[in-house]
Image (cartoon, rainbow, N blue to C red; front, side, top):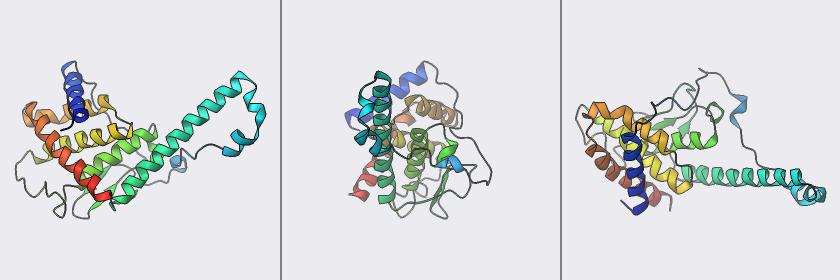
Length: 216
């Protein structure tokens, strides 16, 4: 692991030691309905900021400009993550709005619509989590078929969450509290043995490396 990844593991351990908040699903389910609010961030109106000079003369207008600049930055970040996801060639669908999951038999990632999440960062956290699962396929890193243990799912969930945390940190959307809560959720199945975090971190690092090499 590199220095930043080691710091993430240290933060997770510290958060768990002080009592991670119980994990809850990061999106609300809507069954099979379409969600019109799924296109949350559309970007700022560049024409307003570049042509309406009156915006520069009042403090509250300046505040509006700053807020819109932040929104533009968020949109640029979202576009960057979208390009990354697209470059992997992973099949991402929104067929089932009730769950975020990766199905190895079909080699498909399913995600709820973006509007079901409290914010875009949380949506992309979930997308990156499932993308790490995607690397486990036999045609990629072959994690699932190379492990026959009963606790394979628990280990794989740790790998996916830690791997998504590594990627999220690089994109600037890291959520240590959520990652710690999710890891805490799966630890009992592994006998609450914290050493599995380090094993999972090593596997997560391999998954992240694989994805980066894939999109280059």
